[in-house]
Length: 228
Image 1 (cartoon, rainbow, N blue to C red):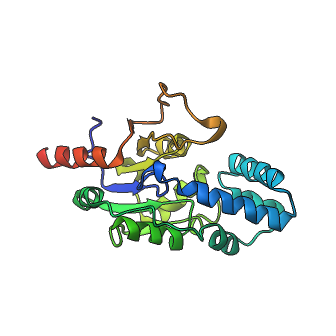
Image 2: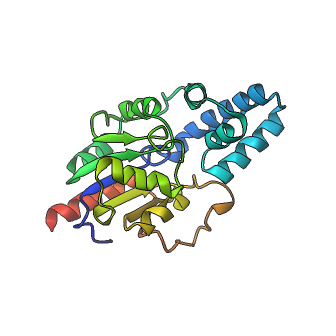
C-alpha cells in the first residue's frame, strides 16, 4: 500500500465514488439530461443524446457545453437534471466510520452542485463529515478535469497539494491532481466513461493507488495509519 502518513487533506469525488456505481444514479441523471436537451434545443431523443455526449467528452460536463453554445442557465439545468429519486442509496456505516477516523481535513470535490451533493451525503450518513463541498458553481463552471478546478479548490480551501490525497472513479480526473502533487486513488468500479476509458489491465502513471472498493480500502488505510 502507498504510504499515507503525509496526507493532511482527504479529497473525495461524490458520484460513483462515495456510493457504489451499481446504484446507477447516473442513468437517471443521464435520462433527465437528454430530456432537457431535447426540450431546450427542440431535438429528437437520439440527436439530443448525441449532443449530450459530445459536450461531456469535449468539456468535462454537458453543462459547460450547453452554457458555451446555448446560453443555458446552470442553476436551472442542475435543478432539473438532479431532480431524481436517490432512495437507492442507503446508510453506509462502515464507510462513515472509516471517513470519521481519517486524520486531517476532508473535502468533497464534485462536478455536481451542493444541493444535490448534500442529498447524497445525507443518505449515506455522511452529513457533517466534510469540511466543505467544492462544487461546479465554485469552479465557475470549469469542471474536472480542467486544471482551473483543482487550482481553485486549493486556493479556496488552503490545500497544499503535496499533502493532499484525491479519490475519484474517473481516472482522467486524477491526472491534473497528480500534476500538482496530490496522491491519487482511482476507484476502478466500471463507471469510467467514454473514449478515455482505460483497459482493465492498465493503470495510468498518474494513478498512485487503484482499488475497486472504497470502503474496504479506507478501512485498511485507517488501520495502517493507526498502527504507524
